[in-house]
Structure formats: C-alpha cells, structure tokens
Amino acid sequence: MKISQSAVENKIVDIKNIVRDKEVLNYIENNFDDNRFSDILFQMIDKKEMKDVDVYKTAGIDRQLFSKIKSNPYYTTNKITIIKLGLAMKLDEEEFQMLLISAGYSLSKNSYVDILVLFCISSNYQKYQEVRNYIDLIK
Image (cartoon, rainbow, N blue to C red; front, top):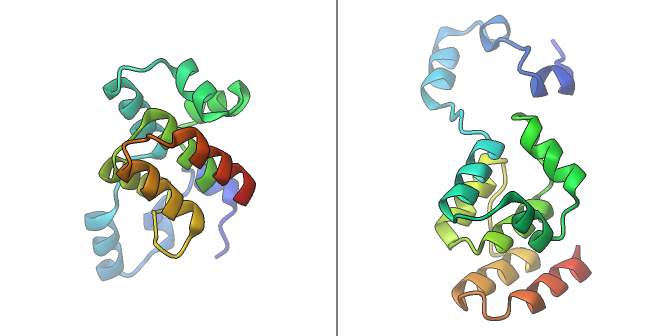
C-alpha cells in the first residue's frame, strides 16, 4: 500500500491500518517519539526568551516560511534552514541535536556545514557571522 506524502503530513494515516504484525506495531508504539519539530523549535525560542521575529530575522529566513512552520505542526523544513534557526538561537550542541533530530536530521562529522556548526558552537559563537556566510556559500 502506497501512502501519499500529504496523508502522512496531515496525520490522516492510522499506523494500525497499515501495520498488521503485532510485534512490529508494538515496537513502533513503544519507540515512536511524537515531539514534533515545530513544538521543539518554539519551546527553545521560549526557553531562550527570544521573540519569533528576532529568530527568523537573525536566521535570514522570511516571515512566510517561519509562519508556515508555526502554523503547521507537521511541517518540517530542510536541514540548512533548521541549522540557521539553531545558530540564530545560539543553541549548544545538545540542543542543536535535539532540534535537528525532531526533524529527522542530525549533525555529523562528514559534512562541511555540520563541522562549521560544531565549530561555531565550540567557539561560543564568536565567529557566528563568518560561519553563517560560509554556510550560505556552501549550500
């Protein structure tokens, strides 16, 4: 059975109608993490005591995309956008990984962009703007 992307995004699909094997279904139910990217993002913005507008402007993201992220709890954007949001909030490595994982991504040491992010974090964001410029050039 093929499932359309829009059905998955809108959470129309009930996993119990697709997976019939009890062992597989039990594993999914016990291990599924329902922490959505948008929930994690806005919790982090609140924790950092930042305003939404400051985050998306610092990240260089347009208001329309940010609004889409905020209004659709199942919307997940691309990794570069998430990295820019994380940099704008000056997340530490653990927070960065949490945000990325909530969207199905992670930081790895075999990606130049990811290494730049790790450098930025390790230097306490002292070269933030320079790193942001490099990321814009690489992507």
